[in-house]
Every structure is written in C-alpha cells, then in structure tokens.
Image (cartoon, rainbow, N blue to C red; front, side):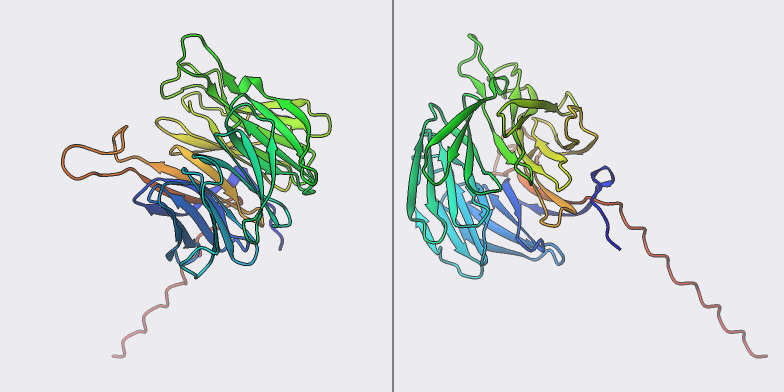
Length: 364
C-alpha cells in the first residue's frame, strides 16, 4: 500500500551524535546513507540502518558545504575556499580546486544532470566548474557583496544566486549572462548604530516544477551582536520574479536566520532556523505565511529531504552548556552536533507481543 508524506505526523526515527559541530548534512542519492561535514574538517557517512560511521574525506579546515553527486561522488567545500571531489571508498580526493574563491565558500550547488558545480563566496563572484574533473567553465560577475547561496532551476538552464545585500541574480547557464535581479530587501537590516549590515539571502530552493523560488534569511535584526531577529523566507513566482508570500516561524524565541530550505513533492516548503538557545524545522503550505507544523529542535544549520520524500534530516547544534567553544579550565571541550532523522508519516504502532502460551499442567 502506498503511503503519502504527512509532515504533521513527523516523528524522530533515529539520531547520530558527533563530538564536533556538524555544519551541513545531505542524504545520499539512494536514501540509505547520511553525509555530514564537521568542524573537525572531515566529511562523514552514516548508514541509516546500522548507524555505522565512516570518513569520506578530510579538509584542513571547517567544512562549509557538501553535495552528493552521481556515481558515488561527494563534493565538499570549506572555509578557505577549497573544493574537493571524493569517490566513496577511496581515501584520496578524485580532484581538488585550491582556492576556488579567496576564503569562506558557502554557496554550493550541483546542476540537475550532475555535470556542473556552482560556487560563490566572499569575493562576490559565482563560478561554474565541470563536476567530472573540476575544470573551470565560467565566471559570473554581478554581485556587489558576498554570495551566500545558489540553486539551479530544475530545467538546468538557469541558476539563482543570493547575496549579502538581499539580491538574487538570475543567470543563463549556457551563456553566463545575467538575465534579471530579484529583490529581497527585507532579509537585510541596516541601522546607523550597527557596526555592519545584518542578513542576506542565506538559502535558495526551487520547487519541483520550477515555478517557485524560496529565499531565506533574517528580518528585523535587533543588533549586530549575536544578530537576534525574525527568521523568514520569501517565496517568489519564478516567471514574474514577484514575491508571493513571506513565511515565518511560529516561535518568537527562535531568533536566528532561516538557514536552509527544501520543497516536498506536493509543494510544501520546509525550512530550518537557528537560534542562540534552540531552533526549529517548520512546514508551510503554498500561499500560507504561518507554518502548519513545527518540529522543535536544537539550533539547526541545515535540513535535507530524502529522495523519496518520506524522511528528512537536520544538522543540529549540541551545546556543552556554554555559550562559547569550550568549558571551564583545563582540557578544551568543544560543542558537538547531532543528525536528527525524522519520518514524514505516521509512526507505526509497536508490534504486539505474542500471546503467552499457558504452562502445561503438572501430571499427578
């Protein structure tokens, strides 16, 4: 019997803990494995059934983004601007791009056919690379500030990239030309008392048909220290480029950015938000500003949906009880991370125990 996804009945199936912060997470193409990048510079793979963990590859610094690709490939980027391609089971990188950008590389996307990678970083440039060997293809110049996010349209012909200023640039992939600019100014807070602007387009996602583009970040920042504000996302009509809906989280205590977005097959938008104390995974129906369901969690950096649409995973921050990266005197104790795996369907009832067999009567 076919079961449809129902996020309102989501339940936690499993969790996998790690002793360092997990910055990013993805399902593998078959859905039977989870991949995560860590502050310890490693990319890990967890088998969802057994929980067995293995190391896919290593960077010299924190992992900023990972992408599963075809043919057992995993692509990873770091905070020094390096990109690696890994083949599962092989300890050495298949290829490496050293300093694809000068520092902090966050925007990372793969084309629907798996042949192109898009990267963006603090230099304001979007670059396209051949996924097969890391060969440069094009440079897309048009952003005035840091590039935070990127997403390919499902047809593979267009790319969207979001920046610090709340601008979303629409690129023609074949020619590398800028088609238009979509504006999301509410995702940036500028205040003369701030030392810097706060916000930017932190995540982008297209729905399955490519008719809608969601862009997320933080509205109405109260300060530029710890950056409390209202995590939000704007959903655009892709054809017209006009905003349709602004969605928000329900709990006002969650005061960080909405850091990741995904669409389910039925058009439901999924977003995760971070906060100083805790975060949430929320679900919105098309056209609705308020979520119809929320999963409370620790602060979250990323969420991803399993290829069959029946489960999702979140990379959650696990605190050691201190606001900093260590605790007390003596040995350094880092904060940790947890991968939380949720089923998007009603939790199956526990199997009933078999009936007890009555003990045989004693013979007199």
